Length: 326
Ligand code: XMP
Image 1 (tube, helix red, strand yellow):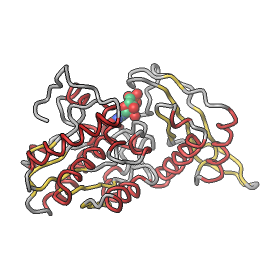
Image 2 (cartoon, protein in one colour):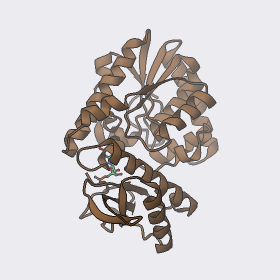
Image 3 (cartoon, helix red, strand yellow):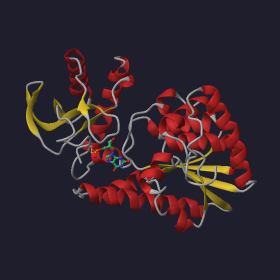
C-alpha cells in the first residue's frame, strides 16, 4: 500500500470475502516491498500491531522478528496470550522481553501523570532499541499504523510509544494496515484467525495499568489494579457485557480507609469500577450495571484481591470526568 491517502473509491472492508481479498493483496505488496530482507515489529498485543504481525507472518514468515516488551503495566494474561497466539500457534519469531523491573524502578515515586507517560515512552524506546541492536540484518520496521492515526497524528503511533524510532534506527517502514479504519482492521484480524478477544478488545491506553494505579506506582497497588481488572473482565464476559460496553476497568487510588476483616481493623485501598459507553472517547456516559452484578463483582474483589477493603462505582460521565483517572 503506497501513499498515505485513502482513495475515496476504496471499498470498505465489511465482510470476510473482502477481508480475504485484502489479505491476498497485502501479502503480494509486502513481498514486493520487503523481498527476502528482515522486518522488526514491536508487538504489544493490541488489535493493530497483532493484525500487522499476522499479515507479516503470512507474507514473510521467519523474516519477521516480533518483540513483545512486558513493561509490567499489561493486563493479567496479556503477555501469555501474545506468546501463545504468535509463538506457539503461528510459529512467529518472537522475542519476549521482561522489562518489568526496569519500568517500575524508573517509575518509582513519580506522581505526575504526564511524567509517568513520558518515562514509560522513553524506557520503551530504550528497551526496543537495545533489542534491535542485538539483531543483525534488519532492514524494515513493521508498524500497525491505522488510518485514524494518519488523520490524527501524521502517522506516528504515539500511544505505542514508538514515535521517533523509525528515524533513529534508520529502518524503512512497512505499514500494511495504514489505510484501514478500525472496523476494517478487525475484519482482517478475524479473517487471519486471530482470537475474538484480541480482535474485539476494548480500547486500552498505551501506558496501560500505569494510569489506573493513580499517583506513584507501587508493585502491591499495581497488583490490586491487575487482579481487580481481571475479575471485572471475567464477570463482564460472563454477563455478556463485554460485547456491549465500550470500556470497563478498575482504578486503585493511593488512599487508604479503615475497614474490618475477621474481627481485625484494616487500613486498605478502595477499588473503583469504571464502565463507560462512547463512540469516539470525546464524550462518554456510564453503563448502568445491574446491582446484582455489581454485588457479585464487589464480593469477588473483596475476597480475592489483596490490600483492598472497599469497592466503589464511578458514576461520572465525560465531561466532567475523563475516562481514565489520570
Ligand atoms: P480520557 O481519559 O482522556 O481517555 O477520557 C480517552 C481515551 O483515550 C485512552 N487514553 C489513552 N490512550 N495513551 C493511549 O493510547 C494514553 O496515554 C491514553 N490516555 C487515555 C482512554 O483509555 C480512553 O479510551
